[in-house]
Length: 228
Image 1: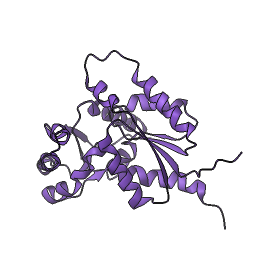
Image 2: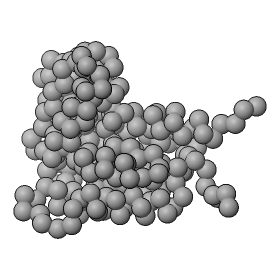
Image 3: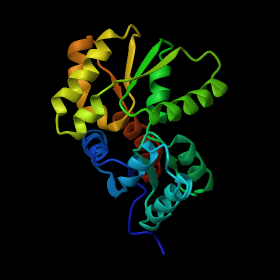
């Protein structure tokens, strides 16, 4: 029986509610025809941040969420939580659906220019996830430009405290001090700071949501187009 949903139905799996608004806004702007299904487990982020976490493996937890998402008859799964690159890679290897890490399209876009890149993040575990993906890129694309990952202290705490403007100001200040010609915001929750970064640093940063939606539209949209 043919699915009632088109290939453009995408599952969003998130570990922070702050990641949802930016990715939904990116879909609304760049691919409004897409159908979205959201799955959120905020305990993933808090457990990842705990040094003493001893619960079920994150791979098993993400796999269970992806299996649930697949039951919704989606055409692809997009994780919006940037601190789980290794686990998402394992989920992808076991899935029949296209599974995307949140930052892979961003990293491809940022490095294709061949210029040094500064990626700003606000959650320290994201650094390990980015390092893993950058190592993969370097193996696939020798000669990758230099990429520096920098944590913005205090920004995530400000966002959690409801001080969004302070969050944006801290990120913009770090961006303005970066010498790299290419700037990227390494977490979906940071997208809200893009305008402040552009104004303070004098160049617009790349953001994960816009890059991810563009890549998914190119991949899944092709499936929905039939020859005339």
